[in-house]
Length: 357
Ligand SMILES: NC(=O)c1ccc[n+]([C@@H]2O[C@H](COP(=O)([O-])OP(=O)(O)OC[C@H]3O[C@@H](n4cnc5c(N)ncnc54)[C@H](O)[C@@H]3O)[C@@H](O)[C@H]2O)c1
Image (cartoon, rainbow, N blue to C red; front, side, top):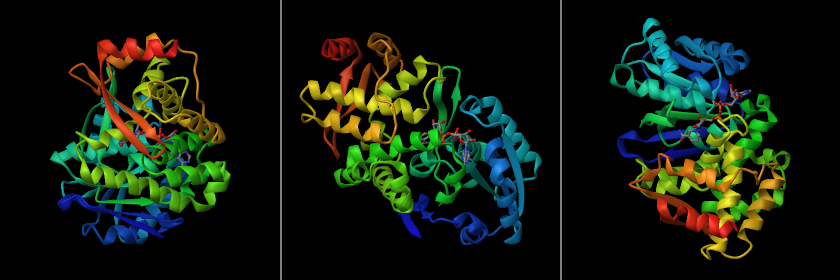
């Protein structure tokens, strides 16, 4: 079993990572929660696979669980679903001192976490992430949100869970494409923070090889994220390095109306493309982009797309991380080390287009 403590003063919490921990959820919850009523929020896919099992183990541990299920998919991470979920939680008889379990991938974690943060002005919640992306990234750090028609994650808050329980066995039912998508974030952690970890992933060559050590891999990712979040919980400084590849990646996702690539695939292209640019700018040491390309291809992620760069630039200008006309780009100096460089939006064309020519 791997354990991590996220040190955020009164908002501190533990993360437990262990194959099979899912069957002991009730016992873990008993240590942090003294009441009986619990509401599990999940999506239709996760519910079909694991919903009954979770309810059964909670009942066996003496809890009175209820379940609220919404239709799976990013397109449902919105206000309509949020209100529907919150009203169903109220109808279940859940009150302020009760507990919510966000049980699913990043979509469930973000929506259910936001529901918890605003229902009765905040009820406690825990995360049981079920995708690789949510196990290595979205379940840690307390960012919760819903999308609006104006963009992704535009309405949300920072709201830390009381506990995160990660069971890698749950990944066995995940589609291969979703696993690969999560790997983009795993590779990101190595690229921005830990050269040794990056080289380990490169040497292991593919997901099948690393899955033998999946608990350790998930732990390393959560550890890196935790270190960054502990310094900058509210994302005003160092936390932005987690966005390596994301500004370009988000633009690619948006260009295709979120229909062509998964989040991880778009980030994969973003990481390679931005590193080619920073290398040409002389910020990144030579051949780093080739290393990025090599590892992404090994993990069967895309690295290129034929979308016109000038179209992406227009989308990037409207990115929510564009603060007063300045976009912060996360450039690698070398593998494991980053530099944040603010680019004025009127300079974007000059920097990106001229270099690409
Ligand atoms: N809060 C954060 O810090 C943060 C960070 C990164 C991403 N995100 C958000 O995370 C979301 C993406 O998360 P995701 O990639 O987990 O997507 P997701 O939650 O949509 O899950 C992907 C698909 O896998 C299914 N699924 C989940 N667990 C499964 C399992 N064990 N077996 C079989 N199927 C399973 C889901 O029903 C869904 O169809 C985005 O909304 C993104 O904005 C948030």
